[in-house]
Length: 133
Image (tube, rainbow, N blue to C red):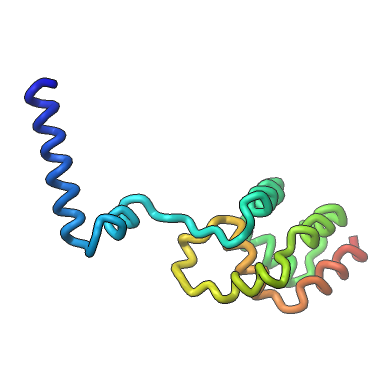
């Protein structure tokens, strides 16, 4: 390796050590470099929920707002049935509600479920919307 390559490696190593010194240990320093995504749901369930959410052309917040308001036009009966199928189970809801960390580190599906948990009588609203559509 030439001198410039060695100098770059040395500079990178020195920068990393300085960065680690700012924090308590290497693990904490690496968490600031590469943020760790928190997944509460089962990976397969999370993947399926993410695929389901991508079919809508609006944000999750808009979807949840329309569900809370009872606006059936954004939802069809099939999509509402699928949403009910994807609702977190009791144990998952308990884990989601107990999560007290940084919500920006949650995965997309988990954030959606956290917001779903805030809607009161969600299943009843979804069932009512299914009868309307």
